[in-house]
Length: 290
Image 1 (tube, rainbow, N blue to C red):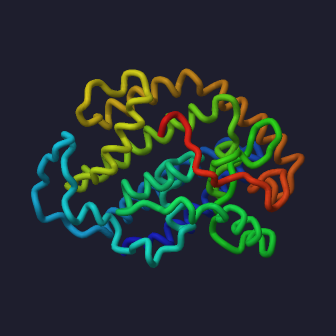
Image 2: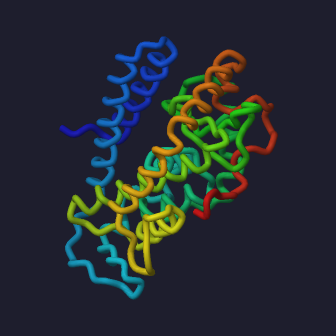
Image 3: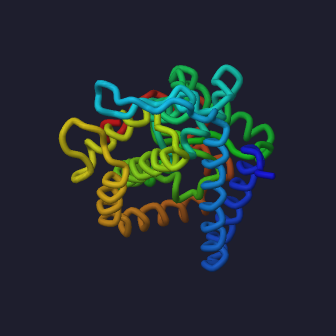
């Protein structure tokens, strides 16, 4: 029997913890194994999420924008609506798809693209602080927390950016190249998610195509003209640019993460070196035009 989304999310949390410990211990073999298993479980999570959608019964038509129109079932990608899903879980869904720190506007757009409806960004205004208070009261009681991205220099909450606590610390650090490399990661992940939906025989939602196009317009070589963006072309172009920045960005993140592990408490490693109540994670600003 296929595992539930909740069980897969717990496995992802466990594997991320194992990856974090292996990285801290300098065990490259164990870290590589954990990373491969994590990617496999993330794929299972995406497949399980798609399986919750109803089977599309109508052949998709093409709308006036040139994008394939989503079938009715595809526009309701998940049977669980935002009315019953806590906002923290909606944010977790979006961030899992995006794979990098993101601002509330992008998180909302990703949720609309792949989970049927947008998140009201005003609901995120206090989410990070609520999560910090919960962690401070009973650390690690939840499988994951919605936390802050950290600035590479001050290790403080990066203004307007949210992350997932189970991500490696390096993934939650925002250095000089971080906004761009995270943007490229998100472009790739959105394109891959669209491809996964297409592989099931469904059509992505119009919101998904719009989001992909917004990414493509900000990646050289990823898009031309006014038609629909091609997911594979976006992946190729974003991957090519990401490789240019990869070495420097990885070094900057690793150096900052090592310093954070030495200087910060567990709470501060998730929510930053500033105290509760400081502005930090949900003002709705975006990056790179998305």
